[in-house]
Length: 258
Image (cartoon, rainbow, N blue to C red; front, side, top):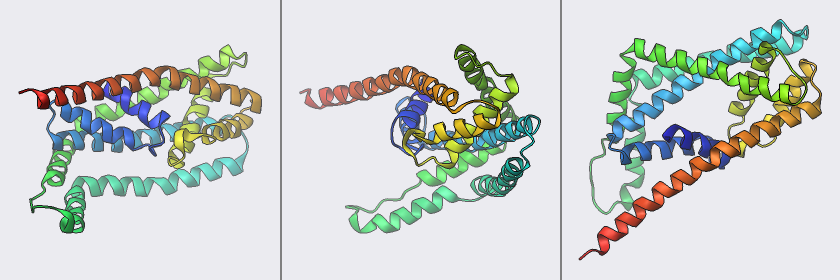
């Protein structure tokens, strides 16, 4: 349920694809998970998601190479993949071996010290760093999690495959994978755009033209995807608000008890 709420927040609300993670940490803590473990689990999952998406896009580019002879597009995508890999690896190395969250916490403490009513030691960032290092010390579990994420992304291409069949424009599995992977890449690059409005549509139209799909079909596919996001996302948002409202109600009730 927490994963559904996180995805619904990131997909449907203007939170720059990070609000869902913050809410996810809070929900984990409310369910009894220690704060450092909750934060570290979200951080590690985000890093694995980025790496899985990179692999997914690479698979999509390989499939596109077999479907088009537009060398300019293939070259541009290859350069983009090559340029994105070093920062991704560097980020993983820094988070794994550094004390990133401890340093960020110390910086925030120095900046906020004039407004703090009392001095207190912060150790949340250090706990997050420790749990992150502990998690990365189990490569077999990380490999399994990464494999499941990549498999889930590939399986998610079935949505595009089925939608195009229902729209009367069936495509092969490889074409559906190309459409899904490159559109997700566009959404990730322009993550600041609320709900990727316009980004998803432009990505589907651009990739669809390479695969022989008309712009009208690409727009219809985008609408079908957004309908799925709304139909599955709204119940998750309502469940989140219900949980939040219930906690507030119980808190106020306890405070008002004699």
